[in-house]
Length: 236
Image (cartoon, rainbow, N blue to C red; front, top):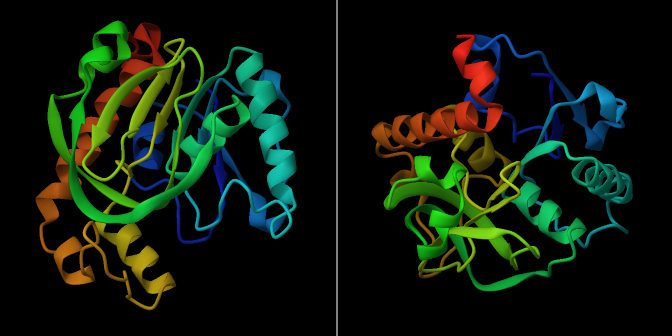
């Protein structure tokens, strides 16, 4: 499976996803939109992974490359490609599919539980999803569900935490890919400040339990194997 990923900020990388791809012998390449990197021809991409970033999907004037990214993403989804969006990436997918992206009443930063929805039974991909789990969040905006998608999870702070469209397009509002290193890089980018609010944890609380990273990474690896498809898994 040929994987291409979109990066929006130097400190938000693939995390555990890169090791997963290389261990499965999936070729993986990326575009750093902030650096002006080119994008591949769509026929050369099987799975598109869109990462997070501090910007909003509405920041076209500040980041003009967002227009090109949205156009490419919309074309990829229309062409039947597989896609995984994480945080901003999920918002971008929802946005190009016609759903609203808007500011939340409260930011969600830190480790908080998400719960599987009743509608998740409509998705075979969602079978890998536990009934409830603790995951890492860092966002102040959220998406409405794209038309035709299945809501997979919600949290106390955010109604739409995950969706699946046609068993090939996935949006995660949370960050299952992060490691302690990548979270530290995000914290460093904001001078170690997370702010205050009912759903905001301190940097010390965020980094206090390494088992959280291992658990959420293991979940993502199982999900990626399912998204990659039976042929890829049987070849391991």
